[in-house]
Length: 319
Length: 319
Image (cartoon, rainbow over all chains, first blue to last red; front, side, top):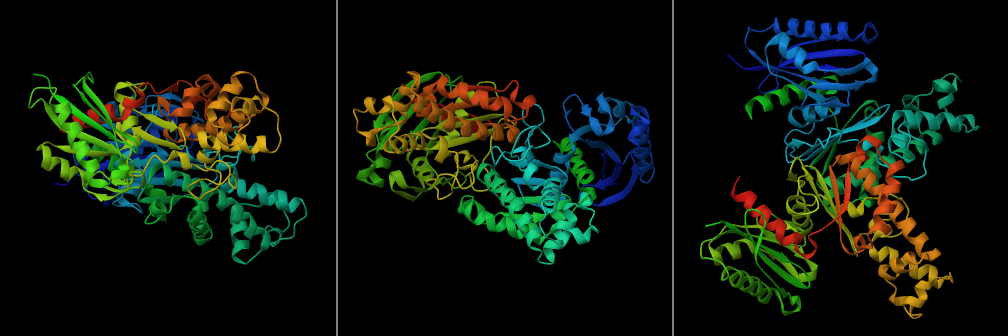
């Protein structure tokens, strides 16, 4: 009888659950809405329910442990989610609660780390021992794997690559700093700059794509316009991904990884992003470290977190 | 009978050797000139001689292993120094050579990593599990410790923190990039900017300190002038350490360390550097990660490399 591991990815809008075997083969899978607005207790009950339902699909005793990832800040040692604004959670001892409920070992992990570890073990970074995972979406986050282990830092906060400042005095970031790559290359930043330049009167088919309602422009319309050769859109992506390339170059020099996996909504732009980043890297990081590094799109999509937790539970139980 | 470990720090100008016990207590110590100009063989013989001399000071059999650190790039797995321009070494299998000579386990390490590990185990970062070591000197280098382990990267090149670009399009760096912190905050960069601004006619007591010979200005005179309140010198250090602070803030956000140890000639400026960097960090990194991080001067000075090798050999043999 094979040994199975159960991964839960607790997000602001949905709770994803998955049972995987030792090779990461998916045995059972389920996703439900989080309904965070109902409060802390109901969400915890929904987590318990999805676990119960998933366990019902395998032989009792086959699931050896449960791993849950959630937005930080959290403490993986004490098993506590300290503060998750999206969930309105404060100091929730989720590991203790689930261990008591199910009588199984339970571990907690930051969601970006879990997704990074998932991509490293089962996804686009398979085989890498030193890997950087970046999610470029409304924000920019990351997870770092060095020597085959997640890099946690003093209080499990390592990997905040989105707040690397590469343009001191640059645009204001949501974090209060200026010139972070999140303020230069995230979907939010690209859309904001697009809207500003359209308001300033620059001509672009982006306006047509939103039927003139400039306030609704997102990075998706910028990407679409760039694919059609629109000059404004091309220059917006050139600029955003120049800074993203600078940041990735810095991380290559600092971490010397084999693989960089980029996920998140903006990474779905594909070549529009990857080609530009690769071009920037040719002149903005040590050639011997850039050479041979694979910069690839994430492949696990919505499963990165749950698959990562399957891998992490398995590792914890076998170490 | 205590177990001893022998560390060698092979530098461009001198070879330092040291025998330490399990607690890092120094049992014997010796330093000789490298005389790299004599060629590869003579330098290897000098390394063998210093090892022999040091071993002669303890009971035969007490030294359990030898660790040597050298400038990179090198391969710690194969024990080979690939290329050390200062030493005119190319593809020297130093580990094999020394193992054959002494019949003991020998390990090789990058010198910045060794110094960082030395500071982490026996020096200013004692007790840290996540530590960043930076040497700010003619260049800027580093070593990263995460989860208690050195971060190596794919080809043992991780830790090139000096080539983090924080000012795209900024001054040209020796590495060929523009706006690396090495080109903004190293001793070389500070001296170069000082000379330029003096040549441009700015008034400063720096000129007096070098008796009018502007070409001989180093970062030492800039520091001395800044201590005396010289306006040009103060503005030079404000600018250089602003960028150093930005880079350190980025590294705090990425690595979330407990301790940052700064060594090298420029760090000897003391408060002139540490106060400025601390001020910059207040506004340029996540407050919860900056809070509680110790940014401290290195304490092992010339012994950081040898002590680091003692710690690394000991660790390797006991793991």
